Length: 221
Image 1: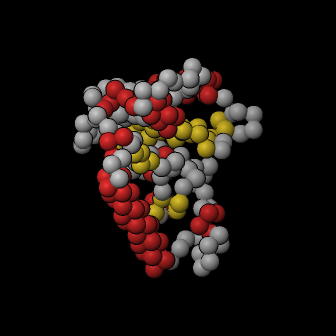
Image 2: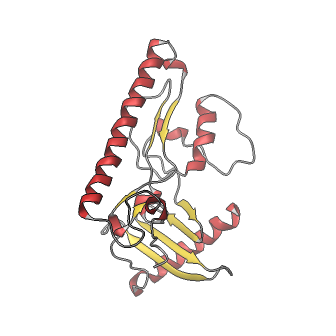
């Protein structure tokens, strides 16, 4: 239950019920509005790129399209964000930069703190020594480069790590004790419907992921 929310952000809008599910009609309208917004942003990005071209700035400008969170459209009975499921933590990241090959696609794990050091490398700027992020500049030339073993996410009392195959999340009380946790096998359950955290066959893996999560938390707090 800690993984779920009342999607208070959406509840604040006029016409949205204070409790319970939205109607099918409202759900369709919400999805329509979301995808309309995506189309609008896509058009604006196109206009910006055209303006850069027209003003001779395209070959001297790095353009980054990214987001700080994903979005629910009714999946897991959730709307908006505010959860540690994949749909809320996985985000788009598209970069157009001078002197890089076009159309390169990578499924490497990247944290958002990696963006700043990457921009430093692309702009030939010296990176500060205190950064926790790691430049993924090498991915432009080698998209199969193993950039990170794990990606880390934190939201309120929840902590989550993701590797290539699994996402492990845990929710903590005020003393730091684990109240509940979730483990999803993305090889067999990419939509995260089956929590295998209590499956004995996954316990060794869960212990390793928990140890890695504790290591990450120790250097980020």
